[in-house]
Length: 488
Length: 96
Image (cartoon, rainbow over all chains, first blue to last red; front, side, top):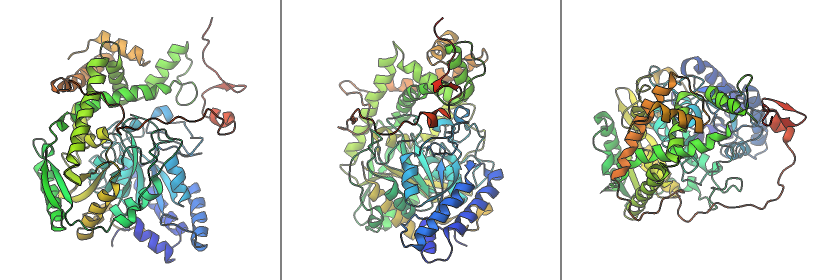
């Protein structure tokens, strides 16, 4: 039995094969059934889902449905959802019921989507394995002794296990693409500024971007259509027209120039990952693409650049958690300083504290120029190398992650080993570029992802290339053995 | 690059994080490792390059009118507050 994509479910709803209430019931049963095994969710919102499904069914009956109306979905728990617990994977927010909806949440609600729950994630999106969550690690549905990747590990595992056909996600250094690769699903990180971040809990403001994890590129196009666009409530939102992403999917690849990133095919890349990635490139060539080797000599400095910029911004953003207006407060504070230091010590986990302190250090007097300013300069150099590359090619191709999913606990003892999981994804965040990961094969029974990176606002090109690839391959339709049956 | 326990205590103080005595050497070690890795940046040639704080060239942060855009939601927001009284957030005594 084939697992359903969002596009197939929408067709089924339109043809009255099932109602949104039935789909939602099936999704809730699947979510609840998988929870003890995968721990992919932090909250399950059965009651509000049933109410939303009833409204969606009315819209469908009245002929007022859009392509997303009535489809069950999951929001990463970094997005504020009015009246629903919004934890960001942290003890700090384990009691926070958001008073308002994030713009992404509001837009998908308006499109008629039915939220069935909130996805587990690394605490404050800081992690690459979902092991830093206050709510415990998520398991990879392909092998429950392995990690799903992170930080959007719950979103990726949920879509891989077909608990829903889509989940929202966010990407600061690879947090959409890396878990998508490790779980065998499609993940899109749009251009910085393309999707509103209003109501998305901030980690590193010059890098964070909202996106989506889906089964197919077509589904990502349909979802991005509803998510993208100017929002006056996000001062970094870009006021640029949103193209018709669905219409752009069928553009032929003939003559499309794909640059293969030389720096990302060397030491550190597992050969079992390199093989399917190169096969994906060969498939794109068969579809008409032209390959060119591209070198971005400063790209290997992405990881050290990121581990100055991201912690610096995180230390500023997380200063708001002070135990006064919301979030965790320690018991019986002696004075204001004790209130701050103990509430924060109790509310944040070890990795979050490590990043706050790293950021505080690089921003402190005497180190600011040597670290913070230097990293911002290297960031400019890397961005300029990308800009020059896109004068010659339409898209860049690289692996998404250096290895397949690793074992739970394997990389928790050394932060640097963990940070290197994002070696191929961080560049796109530093330069604000859109990028996508899609399944391209397996190694030892575990999924492998290939990454495409586009120029600013090049989402249509990215989605088009991925869609054409998915028309002639079926890696994206494979489901893990324990979760094979479709939910509708 | 090696951070001392004293430096970690200073940084934790600036970041308003209370650390236990056991945590200090652990963070000293991992922060030293991170800053050591970051040290690779020294070899990058960045002479006249302008530092980049925003990924989209030419974008400026928009400003909005300083005007009221929504109603008073104080009671709604204070539902998440650890301690409030008469519409005010309560904190330990600040001024003796």
